[in-house]
Image (tube, rainbow over all chains, first blue to last red; front, side):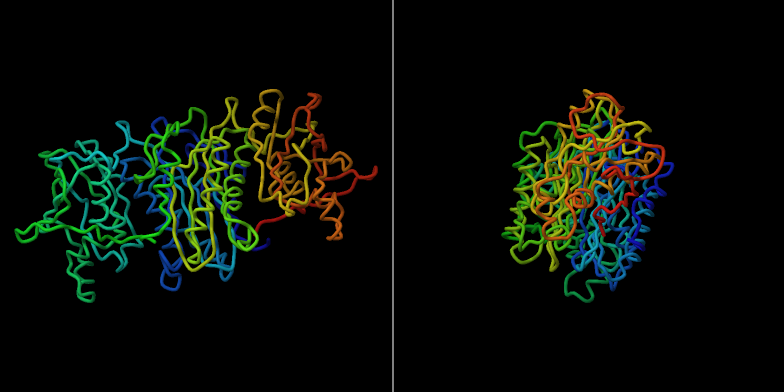
Length: 293
Length: 293
């Protein structure tokens, strides 16, 4: 149809000279060089009205976020991102401008992290905007870092301050790809996860998968200034925001103790239980992070 | 949330003993054994009201079709399907039953073709149902069969009768995975495509990518009985339905001449032009297949 967003032409332009791409998006499938290490696959769907509001958020920002949330999943395995495909369902009103904006955002983040967008599918309908990204990466030489490797005695760390991301940071996530690769190069990392559901919820995922428990130390948890700002209006403390708000995209990891890891040490892995020590008092911690659905 | 469709549990059950799967859907990424041959990647998004109507089509059928259309793209490259991920956006009304139905359909077709569903993402919203499937496969030993390899003098074939798929066949596509692999094992196949947009439209894709022309012979084009049935109500001829209707999921291919290929020979590849010979008269053929968007 005249005037439609020409996705194939767009991808062809993006990928004209891309390493690893054998056959482009004009064919039934993209054909790419297979990785030598195990293949990492992750997918995330962003939905208008749930993950963003188009009246508040530019399509470029939606595109950036859609790519970044998937990169964060690759980062959590200490992997290297390689290729992405994009599924787009466009609203009829202003659909072409939205498609162009989303793709500009996707391309910006993809280029920054060396991801080649190799194909996709675009539909138009009477409903809202849906952006689905599937990202492929390669596991590191020593194998991917899983959620399930935490051992009793490990120390728990987080790569940056948490909480209050809804003030704006959730739209500009910075996937910790390089940080994760540097960590496994220098240190013995046993388990890792990104904080998309919230620090408490994702720690709960990690200890459950590992069959262990955890004890957090409230006074060492780095709290973002956005969490302090939000707490002024929500009746919840900055620590509650740091523990419960999702979409932070920092990494949390368990590592063998005593390695001098240069990140905030927020707790330790114990045999069982899920607790937080605050002002010398240890109490049960609820996995009250942001829940999808 | 209590009562939500537990996608991770579902995938875990499906993949409990699946070959090639190293780490399951409970982690940030799925981790799978990489293929030795180049990796094929394809994605398709099915959208309520555009690709199906839930008041007419069971969620199981939507799931079957969502998996099959991607398998058809792998078939068109003569590849072997391996892994899939699923993005699902669910309407709030009856969402869990719909999710379960879609996943039953996906799983049924995946199992039939040896595909392992390794992960996905599920959202719920006030809008309609969206099913996004991304499928990975492996190219055959001699390399994937592209659209762009047709040579002047090649013969053109189609794997089965075309037209009228909207009478029901479009919901039960049979991807020609085995047929394509058998074809490249026995014969010199130069170019291939699946007939998702329509025989004329997809032939036009193939000759454009190959930089050649094509001449079809109307009396050798296999016409499905559904095309005859539809023509009684549409004012169009069965041949017009065979040429123009999409969603057939047969394969069309160009092969070196004189190999005795046991499929209907529908035309030849020429230097230029895009024509059809009907009752001895050669006339211009329009790429009037069903167009998306």
